[in-house]
Amino acid sequence: MERDKLAAGILKNVGGKENVETVIHCMTRLRFTLKDNSRVNEAELKNLKGVMGTTNNGGQYQVIIGNDVPLVHQAVAKLLPAQNVSAANSGGGIEKKKLNVFLRMVNALSSAMTPIVPALAGAGIIKVILTLLVMAGVLETTDSTHYFLSFFADAVFYFLPFLLAFSSAQKFKVNPYLAVSLAGILLHPNFGALVTAKEPVSLFGLPVTLINYSSTVIPIILTVWIMSYIEKFADKVSPSVIKIFFKPLLVIIITGFLALVVIGPLGYHLGNGLATAIYFLQDKVGWLSLAILSAFKPLLVMTGMHWAFTPAIITSISTYGYDGLMLVSSLSAIFSLTGACLAVAIRTKDKDMRQIALSAGTTSLLSGITEPAIYGVAFKLKRPMIATIIGGGLSGIYSGITQLKIFAMVTPSILKLPTFVSSEYPDNFMNAIITALIAIVVSFVMTLVLGFKDNESAFQTANASGNGTGAAGGDQTAGQPEDKPAVREKPQTPVYSPISGQSVNLSQVSDQVFSQEFMGKGIAIIPAEGKVVSPVKGTVTTLTKSKHAVSVTSEEGIEVLIHVGLDTVKLKGRFYENYVSVGDQVNVGDELIGFDIDGLKAEGFDTITPVIITNTSDYLDVIGNENKNIKQGDELISIL
Image (cartoon, rainbow, N blue to C red):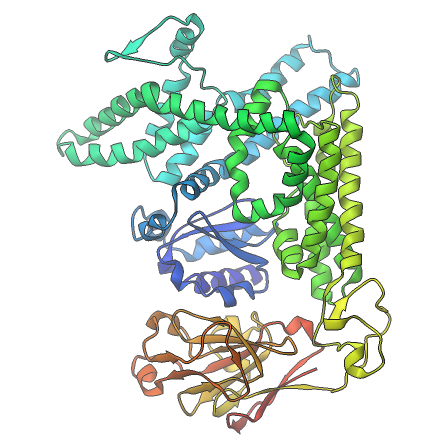
């Protein structure tokens, strides 16, 4: 039931189900392709209970959920009409035009690689198990069982173009079976025989570069991308009477020719060039490159840029049998995030944050999935992110100096440390353990030393109360007492009414996001006039493009959201006027928004206006002054 409510809230705040072109999920995120990103209500979306954060990368609007993402995805899918999910071209091109070539490439890699990660991980673990069984003397490399399990694992890598063809077809919205057929051309045994023979060959009079395309990434993704244009061309020129066979005939002949003569060789050399450049840096300044990557890997994950290195990782593992850079840097980053989360869980006084930190830290430690730790803890609290960078960088130096290697295509975690075991490199496993320990210990200690802002407004600093204890700004530093919070000078902090009208309980709002307090506690006002003023002295932090909602953060840190009317985002600013901009400093009573009540009602919109404290969890309680005829400037909410 909770997931159904969360799904409804997510869809509402990404612009409604009519704004969704496609939605898929990875390990922790819902990945939306939206028709119009300007319709997203990001402020409300981020405050939904169950949403850890959002990001917009490479044309995908991503909502970070955590481990429950498959179940939330199911709940979202139930609410989406099939035609919305599978629509091929219904406005998504607007956003694509805004992306540069590099971001489009990263988006394509991400979309193609995400669905096949479980297959790669499973194959990698089989390889690790085989290594351990051989080292333990349970199996011999000559045993038939070892022989079979070896190609169980190798099959995924060898036939990788088939898997990528299918997932790329979903990304570029082409016939997946034609895409897989093209992968078959690149991997056909007869073509493989030509590669082995190394005799010059030609197709339609043009030379064909003889390349072994097994385990490659970029060639097939580029091929399917080009196929998407050829398929549209074939659809236009094919007569209706013979389209059923003439269209696929054109697609296979034209795209297959281009794949062997132009696209395949280009993609192959691009992938090898990237791998060569990366591992040149590793050979020359390995410790420095690993230190930099390990320190800033969480930022790469946040932007989705880590997918750009996937071809280099696969090339390295398939060629050399190990990766010594990108996945090794992930080991440092993952354990440093774990250390920061554990420190936050120990130090925080916020029960919700403690639960998030423990869950995110455990997820990172056991599975290597870092998005909950990044968005739910480190990035949200800021200073733990700095601690993570320091811990990751220092452990990266050690892994670089010792030339640490990982022998499977998996995201490192404590349960996957055996992926660093090798009979050829006997010290490698111990170096992996030391790398992980440096990362987790340094980030843990640095998080405690640097502190973080926790319940800043609920517990005022000692300077405010006059007793001289505590850290300025509410930071939880190592020297602050934990048994007793500093005594506040004022027992309550008021939030004044931004609108004149009738105040009512949030339960009367016919929107579950507000009535169920997903966004936080507060109160609603049935407005008597179309004027919204600032309820606090502070800074305008959010202003929607549709002009109907504004957030103001007070000098004390209280985050107040004022949402004028329900579903009014559909009006795209009609009947509204904004008098401030994001970043403006405002005093209590300064006008923020003007709106036409009669116009809204005439269009059938409910004008009830929720006033929400979006950082409710920072305080002991939020008490609303309800069932009152209230005027602008009257005390509406008391913050304890």
